Image (tube, rainbow, N blue to C red; front, side, top):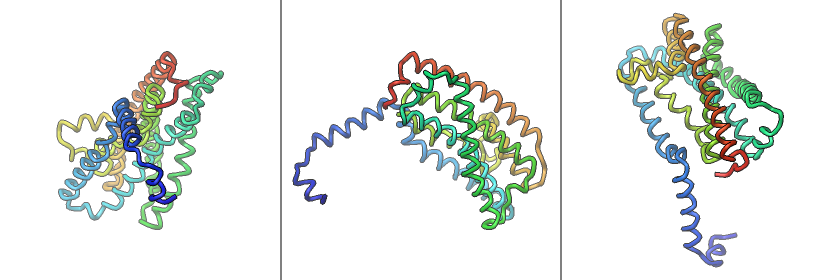
Length: 273
């Protein structure tokens, strides 16, 4: 149908206003949606600002930049996909309005979590494996050449991705589908703070302790050490692993708490926004 035909049927500003009002109500009632409005511009500005400062201050950045940046990108995508793979499987149940059925079955919450973790690994292998292989002929970068440390990097990033995904899933359970935007956005706060493309030293002094409290920071520092000097940093990997165990335990507790609160509030059978 043409635009003229649409207008000939009558244009109602009242209906337009009603729809706009609905969207305003959704924004006002959902803090994740409000956060998302400013999230992307802020994260992009901070990330590329630090990256530019790093390149300008590092004389040999061009020499090793390809390996550092491509390696950082691959591991960053691994981190993001591990969280998103978990969250997507969870959200599919929410979209299908099947959470109530699952939790009324004999299936236990931790069994459900374990199944989501397995699906996260499956999605990760199918999505990132081909990309890592394509980086070899296209850019001459073989991430698999890192060897055993790569397995430790992957394990630490996946554990942190699951910890974040558990908290996101709990928030979606408690707040409804209106909070699903967190599944795509929350991990990006790690991009500037986790120092994916530049060293921790590039951050302001007051921000560095916060960065070191994130397990991915140790992973990406360890990656740069291997690519630039060939040094393996087991101390960084141990620090990341200890943090991950703490975060994973805390995230499971948060998930179970929010699940119980959603049961009490009856939000498991009210999957709307």
